[in-house]
Amino acid sequence: MTTQMEYRRNAPEEVIDLSGAKLKGADLQGAIATVAIFKGALFQGADLRSALLTNADFSNARLLGADLRGAILTKANLRNADLTGANLIGADLVGADLQGAKFAGALIAGMGLSPGTPFPPGAIAQKIEILKREEE
Image (cartoon, helix red, strand yellow):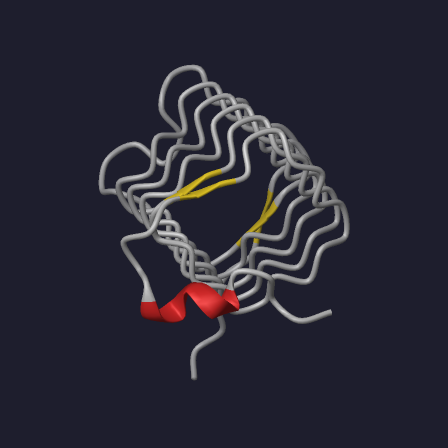
């Protein structure tokens, strides 16, 4: 499946609104959606590896078991998002709003976060596997 958002590469300021969409198992690897709204969308098992999702709104989205390795989610809104079982290895969440987000069973290593608080008050982090980055 080709990335459905790929055609928007030449129109980065165009708003993509997929609020409530069911994108279960979608292949969005390398997608570029910097002005996107995914409120309440279902991304269960979706492949979002290396996707550029800066400023995207994933509030109340369900990213259960989603593959977000290397995804750029800087300044994204992940408020109350469910990332249970998601793979966030190498993801960049600097400046992201993680208030109330769920990370149970998530894989986290080399993930970029804003200095200070890795998980703000209200974020749920249970059974998270934090992997040490091997020296290159």
